[in-house]
Structures are given as C-alpha cells and as structure tokens.
Length: 107
Image 1: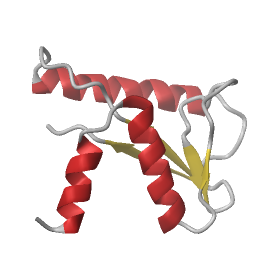
Image 2 (image 1 turned 60 degrees about the vertical axis):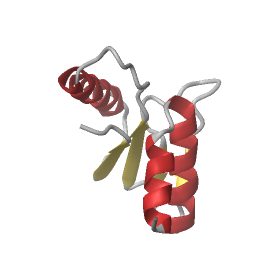
Image 3 (image 1 turned 90 degrees about the vertical axis):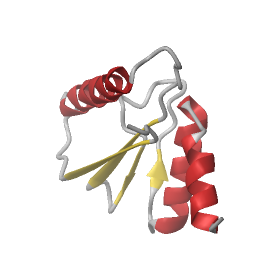
C-alpha cells in the first residue's frame, strides 16, 4: 500500500479533536505561516487555523463515526456543522477573503 494511502486511511479513522490536531499539524508543515487556533479556553468560533497573514481561514471537522446513521444523515451533519461554523465566523468583525473547510467524512 502506498504511503499516501496509509496516511489517508489513518486520517479517516480519526474523529473530533484528534482529527483537528492532525490536520492542523499537517497544514503547519505544508503552508508557510499557518497558525492553528486553540479552542480552549475561549473557543475558536469555528475557525481552526489561518494563513496568508490572516487572509485564509481553515475549518476542520472530524465527525464521530456513528454506525446507526445513514450516509445521508452523516452528510447532513457535516453540512450543518460547517453552516454553523460559517455563521459564527461571519459575525466576527474582520475581513474574510478565503475559507477552506476540511472534513474526514466518507460519503
């Protein structure tokens, strides 16, 4: 199995904060100036990281793998989560130029 495939499978197995930490760590190695935003103690308002002098924002979401949910229910949960995060971000008073959302859902 190719190394990239192994990484993709290990990433897909992560959920919640573990997924967010891994994605942010990877982005820090790939994007010069990437800065993760800690969610504790104040909360990150749905923004998990930024780069390009604050011009690009990143949202990560590693949903719990609930076996009882259908693929459509999982998809709807992801869409609802990103909608909620985007609503919170849009309430902040700064100019947003780019936002990248990352999730580990398999649909």
